[in-house]
Image 1 (tube, helix red, strand yellow):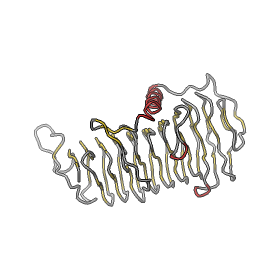
Image 2 (cartoon, helix red, strand yellow; image 1 turned 30 degrees about the vertical axis):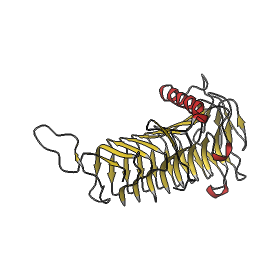
Image 3 (tube, one colour; image 1 turned 90 degrees about the vertical axis):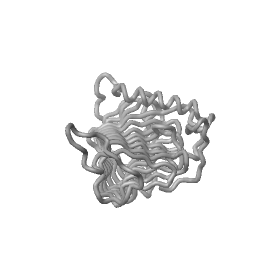
Image 4 (cartoon, helix red, strand yellow; image 1 turned 30 degrees about the horizontal axis):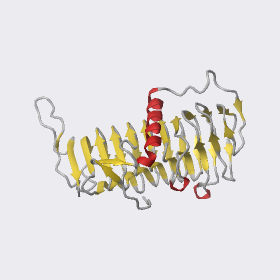
Length: 320
């Protein structure tokens, strides 16, 4: 992971993004919580399938009638609250990861993208402000359902003021499957990242900035899951398999529960300072993957017996 060097401010032991962005972050978090509890309902009935040109700014729900091929690097913008882009099994294709451009740009709240492939973009889906974009005018939020991201630079990128929930989605051949940076929030559920440069990462976010639940991250050439300075990652019931590094934590916090590490080059790699923690509970590790560098003890004892050493464990890295 390559990020500009940024230090985080701390008050009473907790991470903050500074008072300048607090209102935007709080609103984005509320929007994302709503998206988690409420299924997307952009329209009462499916819209008629239509052909959409590259560069279109959508203000009503759309169901694609054909692939959208954009060699010029101009994708689609979702610009009205609550609308849905139903790819309808079609592909939204850009000029290639090196060619740049954004496949789906989120500029509204509560939008949905579902049911097709986004491939060959610098960013497959982008929500929230980047470092050089300044403060967003208002938060944005999106849900992604049953989609496929392949061959993008960053498949899903969430920045300041942005919140994205991804479910039942496949990531492959991307430089990085998903990232939350500078206060963005990304939640990934029941999804698979297989054969990407990196899996998922966070940098300079609030607690809960990157959450993976019931997902799998496999065969990443770099880290399966990572975080940089001020990052925060929560893993629940997630497997990390055959990655160069399962979890790579640099001056950040990672919490892992009921998950599995198998056949990674190294299961966990951490470089922490005194306020950072990598904690795991009730998590399995194969015998390879290098030493974890922290004492392990059984998490659950079966009735009338003992747990095999190192199979279900609890432990914490702290200020390594």
